[in-house]
Image (cartoon, rainbow, N blue to C red):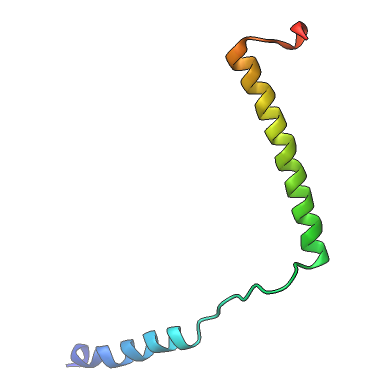
Length: 68
């Protein structure tokens, strides 16, 4: 008989999950620490892109470091 009424607490539990769920709001500029971290990531991405371009040239066109 207990399993028949289980839907009531389950529905209440799901309702509370929806009501009390937290959401993030991103408005405004990022903090200074995050700006520094983003700058580091962008510079790493730029370096990796340059390295990838060099590797693609070597792979596709057969140039080596000694050829330069």
